[in-house]
Structures are given as C-alpha cells and as structure tokens.
Image (cartoon, rainbow, N blue to C red; front, side, top):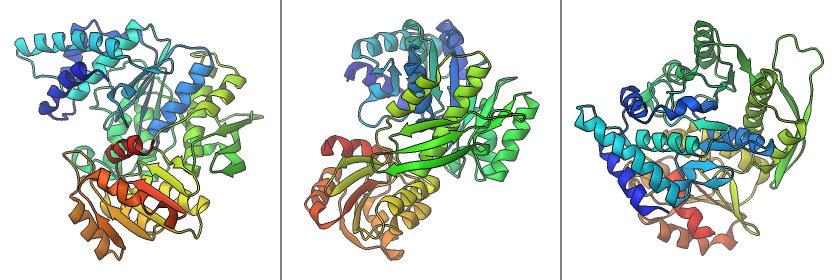
Length: 435
C-alpha cells in the first residue's frame, strides 16, 4: 500500500464530504478533462451498485476489453478503489497520479478556489490513471447520491444504471424516498440509456420523470424474468430472460452461474445483464454470449456474504442499512434455517440501526458487540443497550475489534454459523484477521 500517496490524499479529509461539482470541474479542467476521453458506464443506487459494477466489469474483461473499475469504500487496502485489468492500482502508479492531481489542487487553492475534498481527489486520480492506462471502458460507481457526487462529471456515458433505492444518508440526500431518488436520478444524461433495478413505486416515478425530461430511453431490469435452476452456498445457476424493448418478440435466454449469494444478487445480475445487452444492441460494446457467461461466473465481491470458513461456517457481510440487512436476513434464512447462529456486530451511528438490528435479531441467537474504526462509529455500549432493549441477547461488548474476533473465534464450534456484519469498515478490519 502506498502510504505516502494515501496519507497525502487523507489530508483532504479535513475538507469534509461536500456535494457539488464546482470544485471537481475546476480540478478536472486543470488536468485536461481526462474523464472526457473515457467510455463510462455510470452506476448509482443505495444497495447493489457495487455488485452491478463488478458484474459489468467482469463481462467487459471477459470480452477482451481493458477495463477500469472505480468503487468505494475499500475493504482492506485503499488501492482496491481503483482497479484496472484485474489489478489494483500499483503503489507507483498511485504515487504518480496523486502527484499530478495534488499539484493541480494546489493551483486551485492558490487561485482562491475552495479545496477539493478527499473523494474528489481520489476520483480525479482514478480518471488520470484510467486515461494513462488507455482504458477501453470504465465502470464508475457513484460515491454518495448522484447529481452532486464527484463522479457526475461524465457528460456522455454509454449507459447509466440506478440500483435499488432506500433510506440511507438521509442527512445528506433527503429524508424521503422521492428526495433520495431525485438525487440518484441526477446521473441520467441527455439521450443516454438508463437501466434501473429499483422497485419502489415512488422512486420509479422520479426516475421516469427524469428520464423523460432528458429524452433518455429507460429499461427496467425487474421486467425481465429469471428461473433459479440450482442454488447452494457455493453459488447460483439461473435462467435469465431480460427484457430490453417493448416489442421484444422472442426473447433470448441466458443460463448464468454466479458466485455471489442471495436472491438480491440475482436481481443485481439481471440489472447488469440488461445494461450489457442494451449497450451491445446500441453498438457501444461487442461481447459474445460466451463472454457474458464467463464474466458473470468470474464475478466476486469481497465482504458481501463471503464465506471465510466452513465446518462450522464463518461469514462476513457489509450489510449496514434496512435493505442490506433484509437481504442478509433472507440469505441466512435460506441457507441456514433453524441453525444456531451468533453475530458480531459493529455499526456507524448515521445508519438505520433500528431496522438493521431487527433483521439481525430475526436470525441470530446471540450477539457480540464491537465498533468499527471510524469517526462515525456507534459506541459499542450504546449499540449493545439498544439491542438489549429490543430483546436481543448480548454476550460480550468490546471497543476493540480484535478482542471481539478473538471472543467469537473461541466459540465458533458452539454455533452452526458465526456472522460478522454491520459496517463495511468493520468487515474490512475483520477480513484481514480471519484470512
């Protein structure tokens, strides 16, 4: 990990997380607007956007394209956020691109502009890097929201995708589904196809209105059909029949194998498949059906219902809001019905803690409570007290994550499943300890 570059990028954290594109546009102008030379698929949403990005990325890679992937947050190392051709950005390249970007950020400030934020610096580093690597395509995940997110400087993406929408980051994006959907729909561009897996009627109405305003053809991945052929803890095989036009005639079907678990991952895969087919039909990409199958089979997403150990099972999952915890609950109920389960939980204070805990309590027998190493963390004792008031059984509370993992590992054999969940920041720490 490139400590020097990461430390220097980290210095921009003091400027907070401020939505808006003015600073980003100034910075990119000074960098020669590298983003304008990239062919981008832009992906927003509350839950599922990371998985959708990974599916699309792997299909493009399987199709022989040199592809970039930009995601956040990272699980274990910062370099994960910027991936190209199946490799994280190297320390040397991260150093080089960071030098270029921070020099221009310094010029901005000297001219009287506000300083870019940490996320804006990182996003600019990714654009500079992908241009340097001459990427054929870039799969770009929105950081927060949509319209004001620093990734939303792409003027002509080949496709935009909006995954499921639920209440999250309400302090920044609004406290209703409609307000959050409006922020996410800000990535929709003039005449650019928009694919959505959103189901909430309120969210869909907002997305439809924005698509109409922008003359953007809209595709609903939920209108496609799928039939599960085989499902286990090692993956899922299903027949997918996506719908990509109103007058479809005979629809093609695809037998896909995915390694990411849970029915919500099938829905994410349907969104990714629809996106790939729309782009292919529009002549923006060329990928064979075989490349599509290979890409989906290769897709892995660390920290999402990831099995770290078997006999007994140990699984980590970054489910941290209402929809994410519900998907986790459904996966546990499907694969571990009537089993004895302990959970190790640590959460951020700005998340929907009540709904997440309700879903955790529906499947777990006992809890060990800890806290992620993040300034937004929920105090472990406070989280434990909320859980107790709800009727949950708390067996131990630790501020230190390592102590919580040690405590849980000593009782692995007493449970059919030990599940670590609550925050991606927590999962990142724990994953390294369990490997």
